[in-house]
Each structure stands twice: as C-alpha cells, then as structure tokens.
Amino acid sequence: MEKSAVSARPGVKKFTAFGAAAGAIALPLAVGAADWELNPSVEAGYLFDDNYRLAMPGNEVEVQGPLVDAQLEMRARTPSGGEFSFTPRVHATYFPDATDLDAVDYYGDLYWLHQGQRLRTEVRGEAAQQDVVSSEQPDAQVPGDASLGEGDTGGSGVVLIDNRRTRFAVRPDFSYELSPRRALEFGANVVDVSYENEVPGAQVDYRYGDVTAGLVMQVSPTSSFTTRVRGAQYELDFQGDSTSYGVELEWGTRNAAETQTFVRGGAQRVDFEAGGSVTAWLAGGGVSMVRGRNQLFADLVRSVGPSSSGIVITRDQLRFRWTRDLTPRLSFLAGVRGTHDEDVNQDQQALRPRSYATGDIGLQWRWQEEFALRVTADYTWQKFQAAPSDATSSGALVSILYQPLQRRR
Image (tube, rainbow, N blue to C red; front, side, top):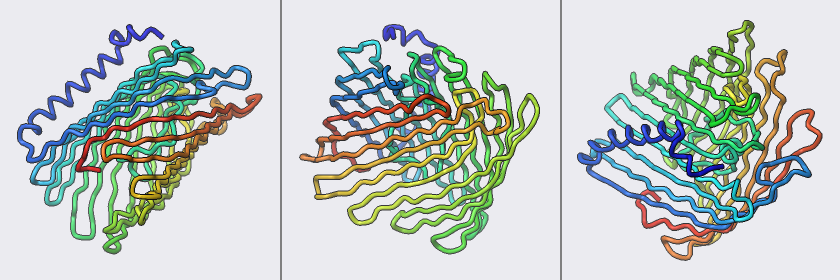
C-alpha cells in the first residue's frame, strides 16, 4: 500500500469536505456557546496478532508493532440545552516485518442536539476512511455513544486483498411531543460507501437511505410502547436497486438511573429491481445499565440491510460489553461481538452464509487521573458456509492511555 498516495484519493477529498462542513457549523456555535470543551484522548501501545487478515489455516500472516490512536472532541453547549460536538480521530499501525500492512485510518464524528419545548432534534454524522482490516473485521468494542438496538450491516468479512473503504453517514432524528403521554418520532439514515478498488462479491460500492416514522405512547413514567413504520432504498453495484418497507412494535423502559431495556418485533418486505420480493422478520432485545461497580451493555438484533458483497442481507448481531471496577483504580474489561449473515432472498442464495465472532478480555489500571495502563487479549473466529475450514486469530495489546481531566467522564 502506497501511503503517500492517500491524499490523492477521491475518498480523502470527500472526507476533507465533510470536515469543512462540520467546521462551518461549529464556528457560529463556538462563538455563541456558553460552555466550550476540548477533550483529547491518546492511546499508544504495542499490538500482536497471529492471523491479521483472518486467512485460512496455512496462509496466516503474523504481525506485531506499535499502535497509536488519537482523537480530540470539540464540544459546545448552550444555556438552552443544545449541544454540538465534532471529533476527528486518527488510528495508525506500523509493522516492521510487514510494512505492506501498515495503515493510517481517519475518522470524524459529528453530533448536534437542539431541545425545544416540544421538539427535540438530533443529527449524527460519521465519516471514515480506513483499511479493510478494520472496516470488515469489527472488534468487540462498543462506542460510548452507541444506541441500544441499532444493528449495523455492511461488512463482508473478506480482507485478503489490500484495499481501503470510505464511508459517510448522516442520521437526523426528530421527536415531537403531542401530549404528556404521546409523541411522534421521525428519523432518516443516509449512507454512502465506496472502495478504492472494487472486488466483485466482496467489496463493492453501495448506497442506501431509510426513513422511519413512529407513534410513542407513554404507558408509565418509565415505560413506553412504540409503533413504527419504515421504508428504505438500497443501491448496490452488484445486485442493483431494491426497495423495502416494513413495520415494527417496540416496548422500552428507561428510569432515572439511565437503565434502558427494549424488546422489538416486526417484518420488512424487500422488492428487487430484477423482479420478485421477499419478507424478512425483524426482532431485537437488549439492556444498558450501571449497577454499583458494573457497567453493562448488551443487545441482540435481527435487521435487514446492504452488504459490501453487493447483496441485501439479513443479519443477526450480538453486542456485549461489561466493565467492572475491581478497585477505584483497577477495572476488568470484557466484550463480545457476533454476527450471522444470510442472503435475504433464500431462493437466490447469491451470498454464502457467514458467521463471525470476536471477543476480548483485559484489565485497565488508572495509576493517575490522566494516565491508564491497559492490557487486553482477543480472539476472532469466522466461517463461510462450504468453506474447507474456519479462520481464527489471536491477539494482544498493551497500551497507555492519556486522557486529561474531562467533565464528561
């Protein structure tokens, strides 16, 4: 991979445009904001992995080398309860014995919140240009701002070919209070994904957009029932365009301690451009809570969406993250992510069903308020139907985190 050529790629030009747009929004907010924060975070460590590209037995590539992950959250809050933040991030790896696998990944996250008397508006934006090893093989981490029950699709799990992915996403959400017990919610999600080099059946460009509308009924001070309809359009370079629409019912709870739970069920119909249609079931359930020394995030979701293989798929996804404070300075960390992908059109079977699981376990010792030492070990497993064998990898990371005093923490 020629790293000097990164700046000339179309994806980087789009990424720069995203940053410029974020800056244009941030400038007036920064000037008029009542509260402005700069929250940096830097992690530097040493990474080892015995099968970096998750290849079949006999083709493993072992790597080890330094890693750096740095980000800067720029956050503004207004007296009326509004909020804006923009967080650029850089993640870089260097492997002295396998320099062709070196990578520098770029990210940018945008968040805007406006809270009125009855109308609440949220806008989330994401941009990422990264090596396919990180984009197609997600780890078990769950971002701090992750929303419970939001399943994601996209990756195909194929990373044997050197490639890079550029992804942009914008998600606006609106909630309008009709009465103390009823509210309307509206949402949209627009995503554009492109690859430096398209690989048929594994990494092809796709775009999609979906919209939702729902009626929320407050059953009690802590529980609600939501009826939601959704529609989506998928543009895939391999399969062509397709549209879908569906309905789902959701029961959710949320208390003063910010403990959240939900149970969801529904169905979604997909119509294909080449003709034919299929109906897929939707489901989900999960919990997010803090109890004493424990922080828990867990959800299991079945969703429908596009894949970089160029096929509309159904994905069953499990996310689990548990942190326990053993002492005021020492924490135990554990996480699991699992997915199972199948072609939404079972009669067609253009996609080989794929199962993927990864987990990590570790300890974090914060010897000072700003500094912490983290030691983790991870294991990853992947299987494609009819493949001669499974692919597995084991890894470890020792790192030091620097996080100055932050009011958000």
